[in-house]
View 1: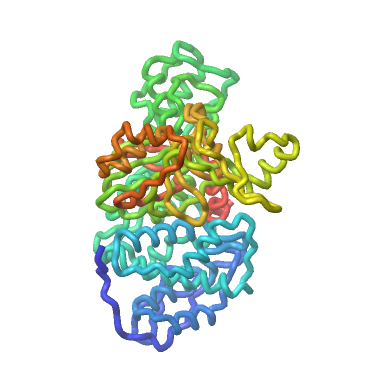
View 2 (view 1 turned 30 degrees about the vertical axis):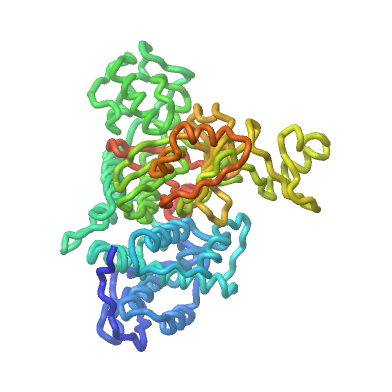
Amino acid sequence: MKKIFPVLLVVIVAFSCKSKTGDDTSDDLDDKGKNVTSRDLSITAANAYSDLFLDSTDVSAFINSSNLSDKEKRRLLSFYNSRNYQYAWFLTDGLTEHAMGFYNIYLFDAKHNTDSLTIDKKLKRQMDDLFASEHLTISTNNQLIRETELRLSKLFIQHGLDVYENGYVKRKEMERFVPSKKEDVLHIADSLLNKKHKDNKYFEDINEPYKLLKIELGRFVQIEKNGGWPTIITSKKIIKKGTNAPVISIIKKRLAITGDLPSADTSTVFNDSLLNAVKAFQNKYGLTPSGTINQQLVQLMNIPVKQKIKQLLINLYRMRWMPSLPDGDMILVNIPEFVLHVMKGKNNVWDMNVVVGKEGHNTLMFTDDLDQVVFSPYWNLPPSIVINEILPKMKTNPNYLASQNFEIVKDGELPEIRQLPGPKNSLGKVKFLFPNSFNIYFHDTNAKSLFNKDQRAYSHGCIRLSNPQKMAEYLLHDKPEWTPKAIKTAMNASTEKTVKLKKSVPVFITYYTAWVDERGNLNFRDDIYGHDKKLQQKMFLN
């Protein structure tokens, strides 16, 4: 994608430091008469999104010393003015989710969608370390973190000006890509739904998933304003087709409000129309469409409308980091959905169920390029598994390694251990590598029964595939020698074999708990890693 914003050659000498208390929609002018967002002093430590604040002189010094265009300098100053100089990308416990989202799309676009963005390798190493850090405490005295914060913001401004077509992301809209303070949920929703632009250019016009979810936000806001939906109260553990009970009419009303039940049926009989509506609701939440109502389903139906609006808003913020899909192939994994999507341009070609990391071994959100298929792989055990799982078992069972087909590659205080190829190998018969600093990859598994579960978070962080042979055939389709028969033979060999792809395939790992699928259906999923919960505490009042 070519750069469409002109680079201004005028360098700003100084910036205005005027402030207008409580006004985050007004502008000041710099010394060139250009608009700069006023500093929002209504943001305090009590209501800020981040619990870290910058010194404004540090920001000014960074801006003036950076090799930025006039427009980029104004945008960067405006960005921090709008936040009252709080950090955008860090909290005291580490990187924010928005930092991960932005940096992933930045890397993706730098590799695939533009020639004018370059990857700072030193910053990437720093970001990789921060992504992988499980226990991190950050203070404003940490100069490296402060510099990383400012460099990320500079990249954010440059990326926004580079990849978005002129006019579709306004200056103040771009400033709101990262939340700045806690606000009432309906106020945020109304502001998003009712904004008007004179040029009739809107961000949703260039981001279709965002647009579709925004439409659903409008629908749920209207439901809330109309009084919400009724609470279902029942002592029945299971409600099946044919049941005749007063609670059935309440369930029908609840499902009719969200459009799952298209008719205005208010009878007390569990009929075919309710059966179809229950199945539609179960599909919406990623549950097996049994058509029966249990207590879990009742609890999902009873989640307040306002809570669903919060969930929609949180995911709309995430979708601002949705990449513009390349014309070729791409693999997208949505962690809470437990599904891998193979994309060709904007088209979803096929899907595959996956198993992701269990709590405490979270699968990370990141992007990279898949470039290797490894048949009959060794499993090189990570040090954490050796320490926490293997060494204790070796102490109680001297023959444990041999019994599991493990071997010690290098002895020492912490031995290097690997599992040989074969039927006991935890990686199964094939793995797919997209080299990264987190040691995350796709692989086969012997635990096939897990793919029959609705919730599939069981791994140590890697992503297990339900049909790895199909993935191998897809990736090697342009290598004639790798027929389905040859692939099957290699998967069942006793020696490891690595095959390099002719062309790497981008992999984008995301975390959406609400989205609209290719059939136009709204989906919700559980917040399996608590990311929604954390964002909710930072974004919304009460």
